[in-house]
Amino acid sequence: MPDLFTRKAEGTAWKIKPSWYIVAANDRTVHPDLERFAAKPMGATTVELRASHVGMLFQPHAVLDLIRSAARAIEKSQAA
Image (cartoon, rainbow, N blue to C red):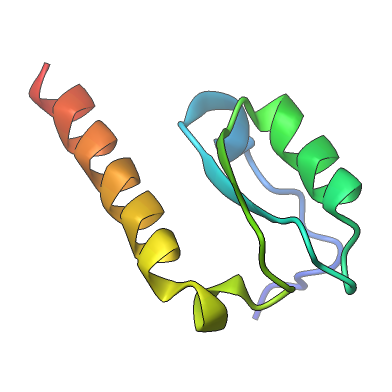
């Protein structure tokens, strides 16, 4: 079994693949500014929700919309 803490990962997916990110504006676990900071270098398509850390529980339709949008974008890019 490989050691997950010392093994070097090959490549960085977020540098070469499209990304999507939800910023939970009312998050009190991870500060929303930190979430925005993490999304920026990815060039992620970012959606902000007025939600806590578990936005998927309180705004599941908005999360599902983002997932569907991401799937359509990937599907469209593969068809091209």
